Amino acid sequence: MRINEWTILVLLVLIFFTLAMGTGFMWGFPYDQVIGVGQHFTFLARSFLDGSIAFTRFPGGFNDLIVFNGRFYWHLLPYPAMLLVPFVWLSGWWGKVFYQGYALFFITVFIFLAAFFLARKWKYSKTDSWWLAFAFCFASVYIQVAFWSSSWFFSQAVSTALLFWAILEFLTRRRMWLLGVIFGLVIATRFTAGLGVVFVMTVILLEPRSFRERLQRLTALLIPVGLAVLVLGIYNQVRFGDLRESGYTLVNGYFLEDDQRYELLKYGLFKLENVPTNVYYYFIKTVEPVKRNIDPEWGQTYYLRPPYVMVDGNGAGFFVLSPIFLFVFRTDLRKRLVRILWMTTGLILFFLLTYYWTGATQLGARYMLDLLPWAFWLVLFAFEKRKLTGFAKILITASALGNLYLFAVVWG
View (cartoon, rainbow, N blue to C red):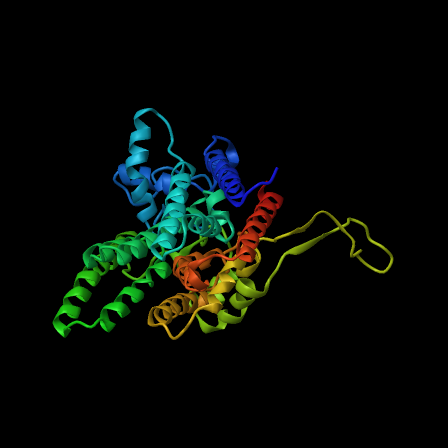
């Protein structure tokens, strides 16, 4: 019996989404490890409902917490918690806790469908569009987010979904006020992902319209973005007495010594000195061998034992987990839209590479998700006649299975 391509694709989608649902809901089960870490946005949403921007209930662990004037704060931006507020409120009526994993599964489904519709908008067949959507969710660094709903990853799922919404809005109705609102929400989720607004700004400036029309469209786009930045500044002022202090420079100051916060204090949030380190961890680092536990006379053996390879806390490089994105280097730079997309991804990547932290603990270079929807759009330019090759489908399948293996080795 011959198994056709469609059968393989359906099986892959069903298996991976079943695992995503299982892991997402598992992280909501009430046992100490889960409640102790990784549900900060749920706790923060409850605090908002209690009328406070500080935690009204201890979130279970000190990792990345800020203690300021005797109160506990969360350094990540607040929109993911705002998104959870209605669900936390409703679950409270039944005396239950709404964990982030419950929302994460549906956010991943939205991203999967958005990637599919983007590929369809770009004239790919339905089958190829499903392959590409599957590739984004599971044959890329997004897989670790789909399978792990901890707060650090949850915010990236939210920002990724918002970026896809912005791209689809741009390709359809192109309402500048709505694009401004979406990017305002992105900025209130992950600031570096919000730099994607530069794409829309550039397109507006290059449109064959009068100066007045371009100014009106640019204003409609930037007013909501400016309001979001203003609200975040007020949020910072109320918490820390400083419009510019987001909390990132204050994390872990309560329970870690200065030498334990060496990277932050020595290299700062964004500095060029951080680029070589990040280039290595983003693009060069690969998997680690798992060697046998013997100590021969000439030193440690080079023989491997199961599971043979794994990743450490810094994860593997971007293209190890996301090889399908190598196709971006086949895009035609003579096309203006391609050049604008490259400029947008390059700008975001520059800020990511100057950041002091690699993203650990992670399966791979997860900060790349701030630019990944734009890179995914670039991939759509790479295939002639808008048709995936057989090699690309094999690569997607092998990559997804390899990513699943690495995830299972570390967190299984």
